[in-house]
Length: 111
Length: 116
Image (tube, rainbow over the protein chains, first blue to last red):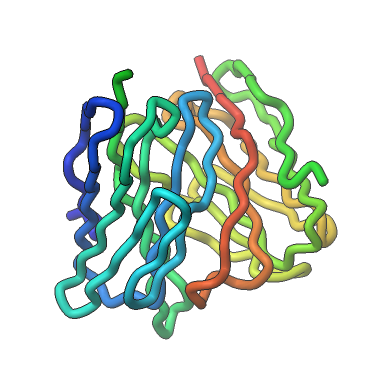
């Protein structure tokens, strides 16, 4: 059973296209993170959300707590956006914090 | 600032050998983490240290031990390596224990470990 499901698993887009990556989770969360893993393996945190929407340049992340769903949007996609995008959620309970990671969405943007 | 550094970058071990993966951060962060990443699976937390002097098990702690040597350094030890421990290992740190939305995690470059 996966607490975090991402879709699609793989995505190929033409440069300039609008891209959406989805993340659904099955647990109550205190925070949701979007991470970017570069082709060389390095991981960078993009967003942290507990409600609403955040924007960084061409990247927008939204979360709907009631529906247990988050989306990552990339506007005007560029080949340098090619990476694996990982959704992660954090739950807080009596046992402390639990981390759950999705398996990632592999994005390739073609010039 | 170097951020989070890990050594070594690559390692090949034989079954039964031991080794220690080193991690250091220069951001004065309180919390540090060790993850493993396997093909087709998400990152999985092995151990974490919410603050200097404390360590706790994560999702997949079996076969590993950790030491929070000081605020900067958090090492991961494999006492008797097994092929199932072939993976990419990431160390990460955050300012605070990851309980609120603003606690960004900073990741090291990873260590690719192969156990034959």
